[in-house]
Image (cartoon, rainbow, N blue to C red; front, side, top):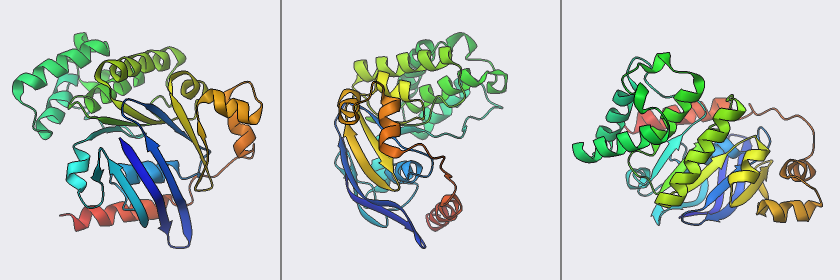
Length: 263
């Protein structure tokens, strides 16, 4: 479902992603882990067409994301770290607008909106303005919205950041249910190692722009002779604190250039 070959991204003198290759199978939950500044966010921005690779290829469900950008975008849903809801609209209005933008029929929109808002326990609050929602409710709404158009691939970039343990557990239970019932491929990043160990079928660990390990949680623990994924992660990446801000300014500038050139 996701095929990445020799993917590289360079910002002036900094190479943020260094020729990585990996595959994600249909229906798989794939966790993409790494310290701050490892290249995870740059990679996910390339996968979701927000950044153009310097070299290498990405295919989503057989579609080249550079050659057929708009066709690729129809294949996935995405929830980034930063909030993207319109807080001056109701929960239902946020969902409705998303469905219209994706060209869904009125009947299908209504059916999917009700199904997802009920699943994420937001149906009773559908007429309330988003500005009245808690952080956990907003995150659940963002994920419900991202799944509205029935994407084959769903990208989740640290979706539970800042949520309490109960909200995190509930959110992943819903995501796993949709993965199992709709065979949605899930590509996620998280700094919560317990989440990755609990929900992911396979895990990739990135550091200094390179993929340094791939496999199941059990295989990674076996490789490092550790008892938890967190210990395996630290054994592979070290314990020093990282600064993840090195390429952020250049990324913002490049995204702005891409948006300007597409108008």
